[in-house]
Length: 367
Image (cartoon, rainbow, N blue to C red; front, side, top):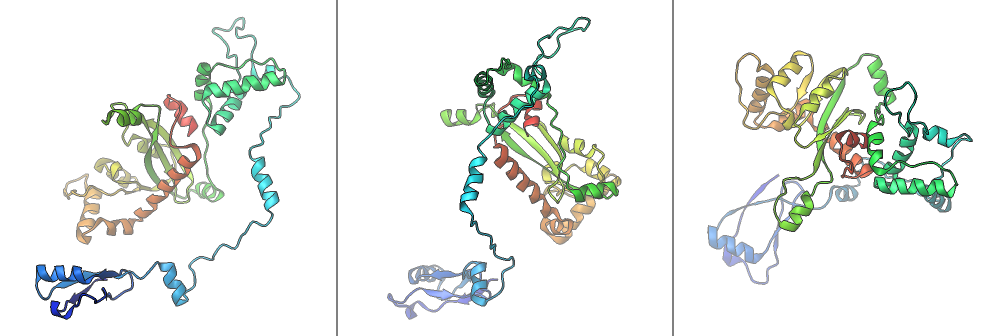
């Protein structure tokens, strides 16, 4: 709310008069204007002038405390009382013990005969289970591959097990070949898919740092680097934060992964994305297929009135009639797109914002 007030003549003010308070129609913003500042306004604009002010009287929770209004959410009442047991559980998180069945580990992890008679080529020396074990430490501790190999060599030597360890250069291939396909579907989503119900797909991308010299080069030479070292992580989720698809590409790739996500065969009824994914042709194709594209058009978009632009013209015309794109956001429910941003925050807090591997396939496996 805004309020307009007419000032008083300069002669009515004294040097000892305290700053006066202008109140608005609602208690949101508060502006205190000193006598000296008021005199400056009077000198510039004359004896009478209009001041636009907003009143600020405190945070919302403080206002509720004053008025006695109940809280919107119940205040958490849980408190840790068993500190000894709680502290012990935290310590046990760092106690890692490897347990292997009483079988021949060398036979399970290592193939001593890399050449088999009658078979063309060389057979893999290290098994997939061995690569998964080393990848577990690589992912769990965030170590470099050299450190993982050194840890495994020391572990076998302490237990007097004559088990070879692959070199760090060789481990790149087994790590990239690991099957990392996983679907995070809750029971409600699985039941919905079994019943043939549609899901809404929220798509967005974020940047992940790689081993490029970009930041170091800009810090040292104070100019942009031609090799910034970025990778793009594309993520598709539903409003319940269930992961539908993941893709990792180089920074030069555009919005092509969106077409790959739609081609997976999921029953999608709505696609929600930001303006970077807006394409008139694709939106029209999605609309013809019964999929509603909730993607905002550019700010300078205009209607065409020709065949093939029906979906585009409908969206642009609604925004022009309302005078703002935010009315279209509210109507289409575009605000749920912030959920994918929250999911990116979860991912980067879990694995960090940097990808240590160089291959695109390995980067996707890590994510």
